[in-house]
Length: 495
Image (tube, rainbow, N blue to C red; front, top):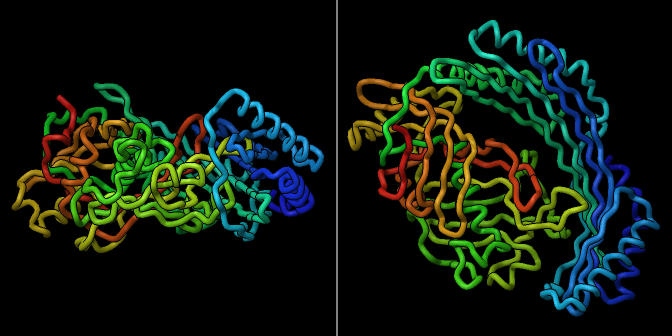
């Protein structure tokens, strides 16, 4: 698919020539995406699909500052020129209607390529063979853990882009994304509970990689055992407690609470802005806590360039407790009073780019040690980690929130509500499992209350992020665990 985009030099050149002749800013985007998926249940392929899309879009901004976007589902040169004409006509109509002006930003030309090393590997995927391999893994897990139903999935996607502008910019990049997933569902007296596990890789041959399969099986066993036990676990009492959260839930906090609130197209209502300007320099958290968004090569959400043809920068949203930078694009940076960071992403060539996150994480200065891989830490080992660091002397009982199961944030007020996968009470007398409950409160209260972190950064918590009808891959994390002191504005639901 990415080779098809490489043959479109004439299209990019002609769009640029015509746009320069008309005195407009023009961004031409071409995309070719191949995706293959398999889901297996009870030893059989429940669904199998191979889909591809290819198309192009042209975004125009006139000298008067009015913009428009036109797209179509093909890559023909003559179609591209027609799109330019259509976008020009729509932009001029916007001027006649008195729509708000967006302005023409000053951008630096760029020519660059970051392509997948073996794109043919995605073409060669044998879905029947993948289904057999998933069925074998399902059988293996089912024999080890009884009393749950399992569904296993495989997804491989190569998302290729070419973005050019009339100033000579021409960037090409391809983003390979592959995942193994499992969903385990258990039943009991209180109903049903589902728990998932996922492993990602940029290589579609991850089922042939022993290390990837071993990690997947380890995570899947834990998830299946949890799904079996949760339906009969009690509800945890509600209230404010000393909390320990793992890196997946920390990623959810960083992404939903601070990430979306720092996207510069939201600053008319964001709690992190005042009168449309980012509140850079203001205190929002503890002085040893930072939040960083950064594209990481071979990551699930990696994107080296923006959908406007700019390098995507590392963005320090919170630097040691203070607001620092926002996620911006050429049309929001100046208005918000922030640096242009090239953070625009688009789900497809049909969509208008928006400031979006890539890999977002919480970093804590002076993190304490947690030797070995994260998967070595069950709740008993986590309790021992707290005891060894003296945290059980400070608070004899900690509530450990394990995993992330979605949530939402009101970016106008800063209030969040998240779901974890399981709750454990950790105390000197042992460990007790509880059903998941809502973790809610103020994002400022939560970030102010982070006291310690344990272990190195773990940044492979993956998912998808929806915004204004567009969905793009997301990822991130934190240190293995974050310790949060009790705070009246941070509460755990329950009975």
